[in-house]
Image (cartoon, rainbow, N blue to C red; front, side):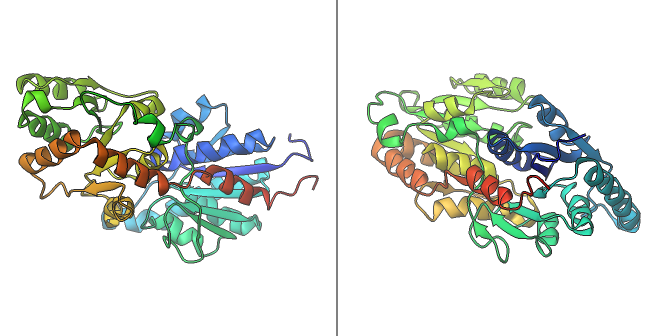
Length: 362
């Protein structure tokens, strides 16, 4: 039973870290303002682990995506959707949110429909430069629409992507990089699940560089790829520190002179906020090729380079790495441009928009 005067926000986000981590950043801001926060997600997504760890109540729906799953999945879709809407309606009745915040992922569609049926204000935040299916649908009847990139959705207010406060607290690149000497520091992010192509391509590229000119490498390879990636570096006689995961990403960005990574919305936002230049290799199978659009936004501002996985070679990548490693002034220019493109107050903006619709005392 909730205090009748408590303000309540239900966050709908799930599936991947790209939806969940921004939602957690907003949840932190709301909780700091003494708002009661609950979560709507699925049992199979990353939220099932991350949300309870932050002591936020997690309500789960039985829901799954049907895009690209074939005709049988499409035939079952109406039944599955109605079941998940019914489950979401039950959550709405129990938690009685003043506003719901949809961050994307499977749970956001039935949750958004349930909120509409209950007359609850709906705020949508789209993280990617090309909006996902769920947010495209829910944004049509949302009360407010926010976006991580400009023009991602009609009616969207561009506010950036909510980030963890420790990344936002990093020194500006002018201070952080001004006294750097010696080997350039290259941070490689293969992703939490590991990007096999990146994990194989980077060692091969660095092996083509004269050992005296190679950067100092920290490589996050993903849990199931770390051992194999270590073996590839060892076989090629390239020194690198390979880890499955990096728990403290703020520390890793602070250490780095340059980053090679995919171009997920959250990664692009973190690179910009940290103020570090990047080479993006977008995931080639992302829906609607949204990672290319994400990365291109920072490329256009001078904060990053972009190469497509399908066309980049080890030699071409080696040339880029050597050029960046050999020119600290270029690294600094890119880092400053990246930082200038950051929207550092996104979490506060999203939470303040939510708070406009709170009915405290009702």
